[in-house]
Image (spheres, rainbow, N blue to C red):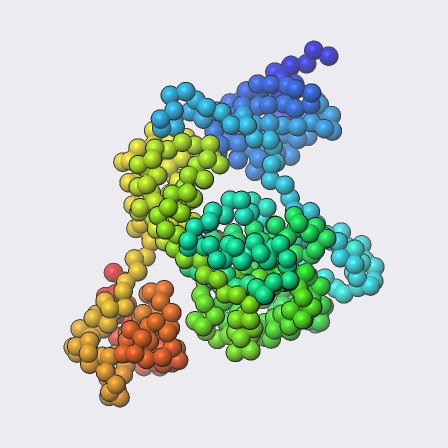
Length: 475
Ligand SMILES: Nc1ncnc2c1ncn2[C@@H]1O[C@H](COP(=O)(O)OP(=O)(O)OP(=O)(O)O)[C@@H](O)[C@H]1O
């Protein structure tokens, strides 16, 4: 028919133009060039990875409709990203990405005794008796083992996760509890396990849910008087992944219902995967019977990644984004953002955005400026030693007195305050805080934290101590 990439694209554009605002058309479609047409695949060149992501996020449907009109049902769109102005690249370089490369995890069929025509449950919980209900696994296919880089900091958790996904419910890692600080990859790892299970065992029903959403659903079920349906729904899952389980703290009803679901799944050889921002021993206000179950399988910690792992994570991200960055800048980032991988990724994205939109090279000065924003927002962790010093000074005593065995009220209070702030401002476990503050056990620290919380609400003078110390320790 003599169609060329340009002629097909011109027709697509005319359809697109009719369906969006002139401004959007100008910004997002005028800069695109059609570069190649083979069979039913049209390649379009876009100026940056951001551009591509924006199109995929906002206009993929429109692109699909317009292309299907021109090339038929099997039409394919390929993005060619032309990277310019990235440091060190005299020649622009390109990367090809097919449209909607993120494959969705397909919905899962569940057989239940009665009939109902509900097609798909996004936010799942179902009335028992639904036949052929599709459960959306809620998994994010972008989180996989492939892009979860291994290092000393996560080796145990990652390998345990892989073992679980090879044999869900069939290893001794049940439940698998992954715990660690903010932004260290708990959610990523949890999704990777689910995604891998779906890959290997498509017939298994996998469900990812945050503890927060689980709680909301439970409350809703109590309101609507269908608590049993809620339990029943969760009991038919093969691989249940609950993120941020520490959020069940203090929620007795939800803990109770989770206890029953957990027991049922465990007894039936189903896999449970949990994530938490703290180790089970440090979880507060979670029933003992539940805590002891969390410890049945394996608790694997995600620690702060070491320098080499941070460098690999940065390089991997750059590679996936089709960006090159000089080694010294990569090392600078890895050296300066150490405790949170999300912040590390944020800094890289900011750098790429600056270079892409402002047409500036990525320089060490730019990197320094950007890192400052992140480091500023990163709470500096104070040491327990420092906390004891500040508290002792405040109460005009020395550290030995604060740590002593005396039961004198004002010294006990100072010690409890030191424990409270150590818990609040450091990532140390209760046990480790106890050891460092006068060789006490974890129960004493827990009691101290509760006492400080209680006294702060009932005793004005004590509240003032807490506020003063808080200022001294965090400014
Ligand atoms: N080992 C790794 N390899 C590559 N990327 C990683 C790795 N660990 C974490 N990340 C990335 O770091 C970011 C933060 O990870 P994630 O959201 O899983 O952290 P989290 O521990 O669940 O955080 P939060 O405590 O805030 O819930 C994600 O974009 C994730 O892809």
